[in-house]
Length: 210
Image (cartoon, rainbow, N blue to C red):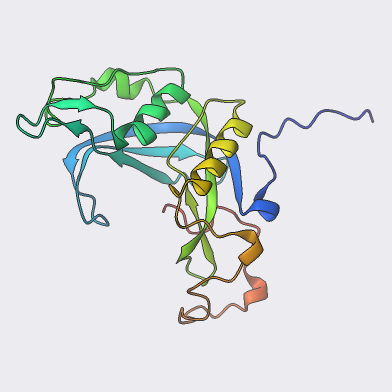
């Protein structure tokens, strides 16, 4: 049998670096305007909930959101601010770059439904990493999503961007693989009857959605 190329887009960096990239497909998208999600302390100017096909038997939801840079007097949008790092980059990653709605207010800057619908079936690359502050239901460091995304074939570029953001202090909860002790280890009450060895630690999507 001839040797063939490995077409798996996953970087395979999970064990060595405590992060990995994966290719996902959008099943559906829902926009939120000036709403606070139940787990948030403050509302976002713009949010987007994606239902994703991750190649598993379930389709997790992933929320991206942020706030615009606004004129303090009029409240009008003057720049992207944190909306770009999540939603703006996502649209660029799927080949549908959008313009910043300067001059609008967050309440009036809405997506046409056909634009949201056109996200269905689009693929992009995202990155997940082990958190130093969050724990899953088994008491293990939780895999969480990096808000930046990139287009297909740009796994290395996204990984490099993630490393730079760690170095520059933008990602504050990355669990360094060289210091793999978790601050919450041993503090989570064991509520499951299964023995630890019975838990499949190689399931990188355990606990989704996050």
